[in-house]
Length: 316
Image (cartoon, rainbow, N blue to C red; front, side, top):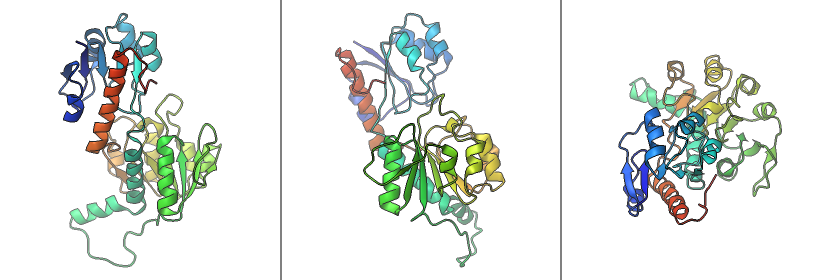
């Protein structure tokens, strides 16, 4: 029977679909440590890892003849896996695209609304008993409808966000991408990221995490943004230079920010937590039961197809 390691607890519907495997479910919620990463490759035929399980090149180098044949990642992002090193070691890597698209786009809209309308700040005021009642100039935020949004990365998730902005809020859509896209809604491509940042009311990071996108949103991009504009990040934490963002927020250089991910997650700097003009969510992008089940079942399908001797539908 094929030995499978699931690195963190998953919904029961997903586990029930794996009854043909010799299943080990690790009960920890933190990522695999160095020893666990190596034993996963040595002791199992397959691993179902997720965010933070750092299967780096040195890990593969330490296990030159791994027993594992596939890493069926739970999630669309797989920047925690060195896919080239995995493939060189003879492992197939898969992910779960599609399942996360709408849920992540919804969180982007949540952050856009919360940041623009100062919802987090307002809730803290009410909870602290500091609200003195409505008045005409209290907590004036930015009206989102009709504004211009800039999408950095027009993949599945970027397009889903753009559709919500265009059709739901009547927003003008601009975007930055490696190439121009053929889209089913009006959108203007900008080939210079700083130019895009300087022409929008909301800038949304929706690119995959990689060496190429590390600190893509840096001090120069933040400096190009309008003083009333908001930055939203639902991609990977290190896409944004967190130190530069904190400085921009502290100086009121931009209007605000909404973050679901962090550069050194789960560590969130005290300086960021102290700021009122930023909304901070605990990586809720796909945190809906039906979405997590769909992600898990997609990973299950990748595993079953692979061990049937065929190419998995979501090989990376």
